[in-house]
Image (cartoon, rainbow, N blue to C red; front, side):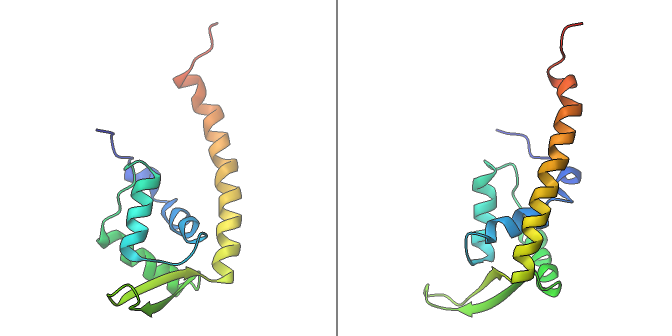
Length: 116
């Protein structure tokens, strides 16, 4: 079994992860949780008590919007990106990749030290 990621490492990335998933189209809450879990090989497994407040905050910030739909046989709240949300995810993704590259360069010497 894989070890879960430290919640402190994920704290600043959850918005980006959820917004990134929504770039492929609208999803309802549980499907967002599932996609996040599957795309991270189970390393990120958000519980409803974390996911739904995050979705409400993103909606309050006008980054996502919801619509109700019952075409799946069950009434569900579907979330989708707004134009503001799309701009935000594109900017944050670029910033995060640059940041991750910086961290990778620094910690690489710890994980894969070069011989002296």
